Length: 108
Image: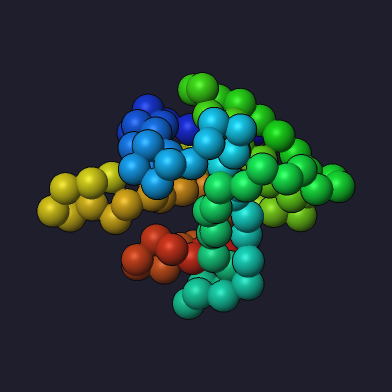
């Protein structure tokens, strides 16, 4: 399961409205190579399911990830932090053995 905090749900809803993203688009979360710790998170809106996709719904948000990324994201919570010291979207990932100081990449 991938979880969506209330803060992330609110921001996703704001982005949908301001960018006119249709309700049939879901949030695609993936893990890609890169960043100072080796792996980075990627967020997109998508409306095409792919073979081996894993789909979840939490807090009213449909989240889809590919099987490989899911192995890194299991039990992760997507959060959003705004304000002066906010980082934007952040992943609270219990599988990460270390993260970089900016929080945008991780290692397992």
